[in-house]
Length: 401
Image 1 (cartoon, helix red, strand yellow):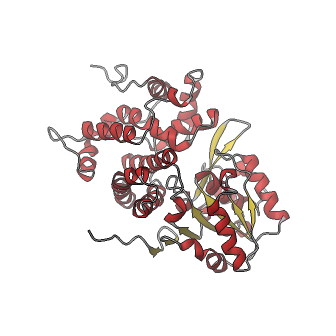
Image 2 (cartoon, rainbow, N blue to C red):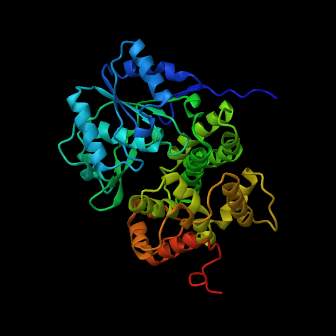
């Protein structure tokens, strides 16, 4: 069996140094962006982790004074961002190293945006032309170092931040929030426990799947999304079973960046529901997506069934009677089970006390605009209710027979 090449230097969608051991290039990456006093932003769980300490030691050996800011929640908040800005300014830093999973990367990118702004964070929510309010000259340069294969935030132009006052997740956007340079080193992901590997990995699949199903013509995004789903199907079970499988870790790290690149086309009802649920109940974003996915697939059947035959062929699934919808849905359910993902939201501690509220919040979420079928708040509430109880039947009230 020929060993696959798992390293390379890419310039799409930004400059990416990809390969095992490339964390050693961190000082040079900072130098390319004229960063001499970086603030390394990560989450509290990674602050004392060996991979973080290794990065700090590499910088120290190169004479690069680096301070850590790790006051970041799993669902990063506006307060986290504000505190990060204070740390950046008081430390007289000149750039940000975004280090970690989605929470650390999103917070770091938002901090880098806000260090030179006079307006509050919420003035830059991704609505209309709000991004034009940004003082680009005040933004700090960012080197991104992902340590999970999930959100793909290293290849994204936005951050998802929780507004604690309103209990809403908001998308903060500016084109230049895309990190100028990324170091994707699969060796940094080998210590991820299996359950995090599974949840973040299916998050990647959902990014690709929702982007591919989103309405509109975007062949670039569609091609990336299809290949991303193929990589997840091939490599996630391997990474889950053997965290030290570097080829599998590399495949998943690439797929994560691909998912974030593809969903510039749009997302959909999975994310529209996961965002308010994460805001209200502080649950892991990737796990929420993983649990919700099949219920949204069922709800969207009438709009996406025609595309499932091609996806079934890409995933090498047996297709009966010329259609692929049933094959893909069954594969998703089996795939989740294989990776230890619970079947219902109730199993992960999501209560049923705010079903109608969640429906209204999902409808208001920007991701709802990319769903193949425009859903009402009542319909979102119905999908949520079914995900709580495990009901994967077609909803008769919306599909009269």
